[in-house]
Image (cartoon, one colour):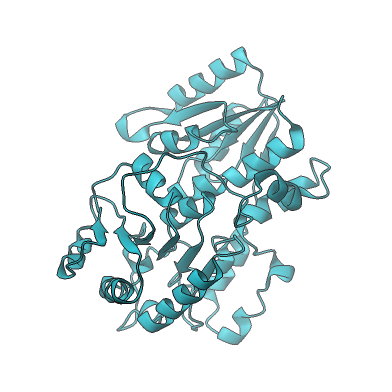
Length: 351
């Protein structure tokens, strides 16, 4: 059987789809072939996954057109007939792609858009509590997709099957494949202070204070991972320590994956870095502000944790890209350094 999975972006979402890949491999066996369509910047990441046979890139930023993408897929289809398309993006562009390949059967993921929409519009903490997992199915995306599709594939134990297939120390369903060790002193904790949108970032001053405390109270090296555009990480320059390694803008995606894969712990925002770390079996502490764990992006491993404050105004959007209308960014600022430090202490004690 040849299945084509489609997920263009973003980094964390692409990583989360590895759970679906692992489940399909565990269910269909070694003879199944999986191809993956994604944006060009994530080809190296998904291409390293051991269950992916073929990766088709789409480089729209550099002028590649839909016609180019369709020709790539049709060429693949002529070489090895595609039996099923799994649309894991469920947007207008993936719909357009499915329509152009109408002769191939397709399944589309349910992203729970209505549930997420209502969570952002309700301004009552009490009413928001009604949105539990059993009633609305707002469980982590990695398990939700498997549960949504397992009936179609006549599989009664999809999530458990995937966990047994992965056999990860954190019972994680996601994976990124084997990674080489980046030359850093061990053991180390990764701090990932960036996010796709600024409102999703815990204040950098809080990250700096947390780093200062961890350097003083623990023997761990501290590694800062962020992108070239995240110049706010210059704030870590106020800390002078041989155990602090600020690698903001100094590593490629592949090198960042190597670093995350060998960390003891990863502490970050609701972002792709945490998803990559967890896919490598590393426990994660994820800090949520304007977004909500019930959207499906909470860490799913048994040793991972998250922190979020109940507030009438959050979640304020499904992506966290809009600036806060209040005079302060309460959903992030109310998560104290002491609270994060205590959670880290508990997590390290459980390792």
